[in-house]
Length: 142
Image (tube, rainbow, N blue to C red; front, top):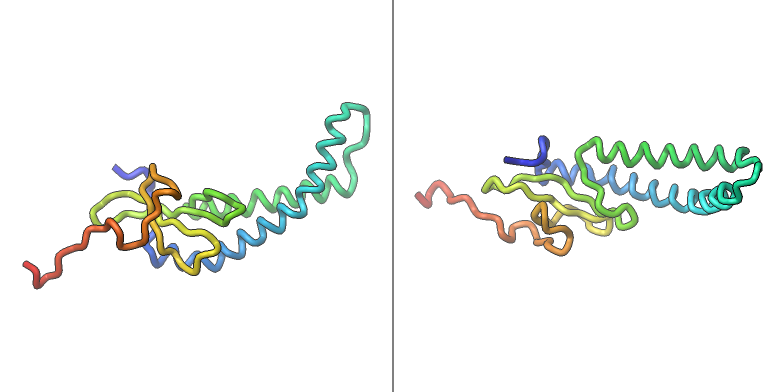
């Protein structure tokens, strides 16, 4: 019995790639802006003194954090599994022709979805599309 309710076709997964590329770029930009602000506020909070940790920087940090969270939630709401934000690595639940549930696997450096792996295998088990897939007999093959 499949784990996921929605399974992407290869065409559906590839159609999402332009949006995913933009969203992963946005997440990387937000991470760059968040890192110094997060470090600054972590120091203040660790001091445990009655200091003011509010102000413009905290407001900016919270605003950027909210944008980051909303972008990640948007990707997840589509049914895409984020595996590594820094690498732009994600999986799309998919059913092979033989009924096996697998992931179509893609990362931002790749022009299209061209890999798959079993649910339990992870990135190390990636195989090119077509590898390990059972071919359906043609009509003239009886």
